[in-house]
Amino acid sequence: MPRFSRLCVTCSGENKAERNRNTKIFFKGAYVKYPFENGLAELPAEDRFYCINEYIKTLIALEKGGELQPPENFREWILYTFGTGIADLYMIPYNEKIWNYPAEKMSLHWVDGRIPPRPPVEDIIKSAIGIETEGYTHQSVFTYPVTGGIEALVRAIAAPVEDTIRCNFSVSSIEKTEDGFLISNGTETITADRCISTIPPQELLPCLLDVPLEIREAVAALCYNSLFSVCLGVSHPVNDYSWLYVPPQKELGMFNRISFPSNYSDAVAPAGHSSVLAEITFNEGDAVSRMTDDEIISHTVEGLTKMDILGSPEDVVYAAVKRQEYAYVVYDLAYRENIGIVLSYLKDVGIEPLGRFGEFEYLNMDGCIRRVLDFLDLNNPA
Image 1 (cartoon, rainbow, N blue to C red):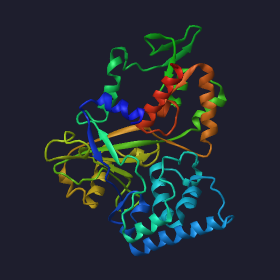
Image 2: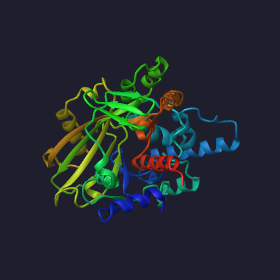
Image 3: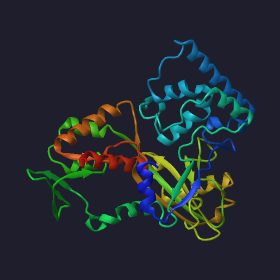
């Protein structure tokens, strides 16, 4: 068992449930197997032919050599990897929906391990004629806390040092001294030997004095998305899916992913009920960001009803919206240059960035914990 998995299993103790991933893509009214290229048999015949034909044409072009240039951005990588059919029908529109950013303006350095790779042609043909294939086994089985939600895992990991953790201390200034750091919230100052930052650099730099213009410009150029999490309690069981991906479909609206936490643990919702979480990405200042919570909820409930996940809006017995400013790190074409400038500056200052937003890198929860373990190994060699 990998080190990360051992840590989570050990810390969770008995508070964990194991589930098989059951993930779909909602496409033209059908629940298509994820990843998309493994569910081609569930597509309309014309779409199925389009995907197979373009995929094979792409493979032939690659075999001939010279006809396809190596990709230089995310859009080109999608076309190069999956062909025009899969790219046009799903990969490009879905990714542009969730990232809220043009695919041709995104880097491709991050795709390895994050997006399923090019499948063998045999799997594409099998998928198209209805022979079961499994192209992406990552997270095919996962564990989730029985009670407490995913935060229960964080609390379990923190439990041995909980007495030393100080919360609700809004940092306003950080000053480097000969002995370490002076960290203040405006009324109280804490002296620290080291400063490890997990907050976004956009929030960290205003706490520092005399930050050079070049560094401030690099931070301002870093792209990210914000997120509406629409949390619904439903008066009945809804389905047995883990989560759904929803590419652009005008009649459904803005949410790009729907998950069903009550399918992760029987204790997440009251008996006979279920929970649904819809995610909508936005950028501050756009039309979506100006919607009220009630408008976001109404919009989401309407879309879920059209998908038959809800029988009617009256099925919803609880609704809330959580707004998160920093949600997805967007890898634009200038990302690596800008983040390199920022991280180099923080290193010179002596601040150690760590985690998804500290390092400003698109990391899942498991990736964040792995980075911490690697950080501990590096700073505490045996």
